[in-house]
Amino acid sequence: MGIHLRRAVILTVFFFLLCGLAYPLAETALAQGIFAHQANGSLGPDGSTLIGQTWAGPQWFHGRPDPNNPMATGGSNLGPRSKTLERHVAARIKALRQLGVRPTSDLVTSSGSGVDPDISPRSAYVQIPMVARATGISQQRLRRLVASQVHPEQLGFLGAAYVNVLELNQALARLK
Image (tube, rainbow, N blue to C red; front, side):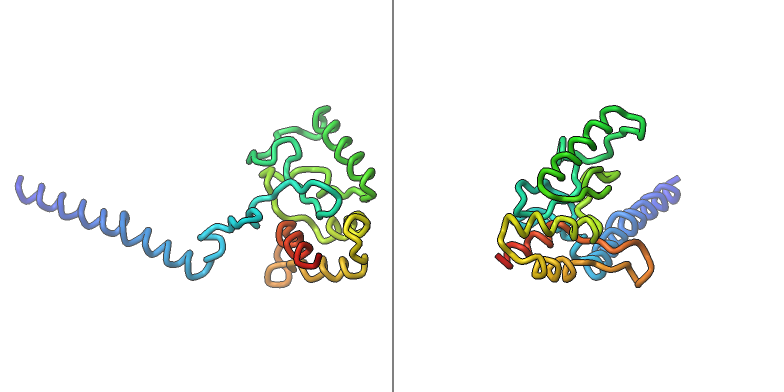
């Protein structure tokens, strides 16, 4: 019986060292080496590039976080026949039109997570007249700014091009 107990203890210690220490350390090292930005988080003084924020006023580009609860994660679970969703979208369309923005689907609907920090380049470009009026920066200069912030498809064909709204607004603040 003593030999069986000793083997069990040795195996327990071995798997503890392998699965409890070696594997997590290897995963952490791999994450730090390949995905350091994501592994360390992106929270800075202006917010996070991985979590969308609400931007108040026409002097900023607007993203698509849930306008009702910007800190909530998870979808709203409102389906296409939901009257609540219809009212939210209609209110968002009205607010954007009052600011002089031609609404796009990115700007009037939240993402599946409710905290997507990115919008399509088209959604950024349609906001240029609003930002130009509010800041006095020329539309041509703002177009170049947006173009410089467009992240292309990964490997040239995976996903869609996007603009991170926090990074765009940080660049806009430096431009001012």
